[in-house]
Image (tube, rainbow, N blue to C red; front, side):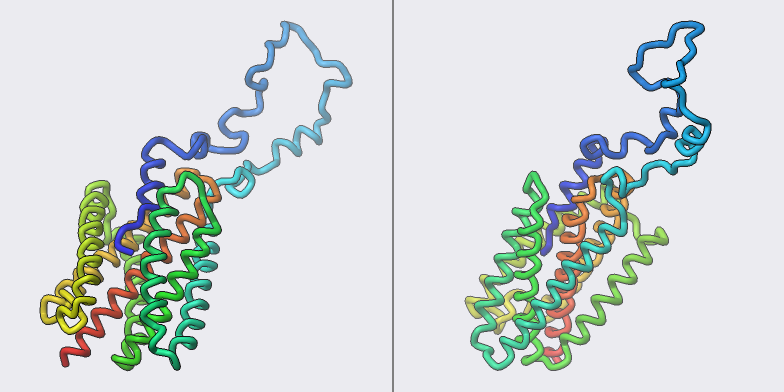
Length: 297
């Protein structure tokens, strides 16, 4: 998917100053201290609490020794939450893709219908999930299933036509994912407000181009490749790889901002969904690029 409304939504909420009250305090007892409770009536001068109102020294010490409430106790997002949800969704995508591959293998005539349903269905659900006012885990799981069906059908078809292209695309995708994360973490790859806007406009334009190209390929233009045929196709594919790669950096930065901003834990599903969607996009771009290069030999 060329555009991810999930991260646009999260970034917008973060820019507005937090997520429904999350991240506005430093947590625990550190900010208010252990003095008189806020809102309590002032104690009169010379007041001494009676025996029933006193607290033992051990109880006081136990209270002081308690660690401040962490993200897990306050319902805030942690990096572990995002990693777990991402792996769960990625596992669903891979499992469905493998099952679809085995189903399509001896039945190549069913590959195209599954391909189209998975592609357009997952695209529609991506926008429904991104613009929904609440986190719908069911839709996110259905989206992962549709993406898996799409990947299985398209990968089986490309492997039949261009042997070895799937393995090459998988290795390139994983290597790029690792490289982008290291580059972003080390500060070599910057994500700024300006770069986000530029990327958003470029990605939206690229998505429109993809839809136009699908229509052109069905009309037989470019021997089935559409506008991707010839040397121009290689350049466009490289552009797609570049956009999908930078999308990962934007995703990493958005996850970091959501965690540090104290987003609710439920956002881990949205963030995991977005990361997996970007990873699938990158894989498809590599698959197309290597197929074009192999066909031009």
